[in-house]
Image (cartoon, rainbow, N blue to C red; front, side, top):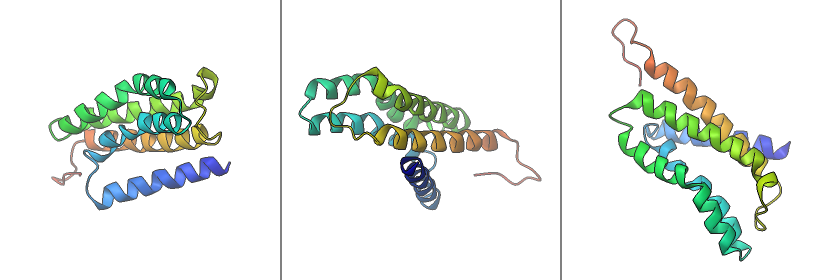
Length: 144
């Protein structure tokens, strides 16, 4: 339960920081790069480079998607926000099955639940944001 609360607080902090910096168009996309890097880093800390490579291979959609979507965010904000939301939600699913899929000897036992909490919270927030961006402006007022 502590891992879930910590994950939700971390997600809230990332959301608050990105809003304060007015960086919502690119920060969440670039943050996708961190997701597989953390799992790979845990493996490297445990001196398991083969597992680190495997984690990065599985994380390739997040690595590539993060860079490409960050670059496209200004041109296609609704579609990019929706795709970034989907990747965060998918990574939450990956976190949920990760311990059953294979063993990463450096990963703390609490980490998949923590990371899934962060990922799902950010994915839900970005889904809401994409829906908000897709709505036509009311009374001539544009939404951010």
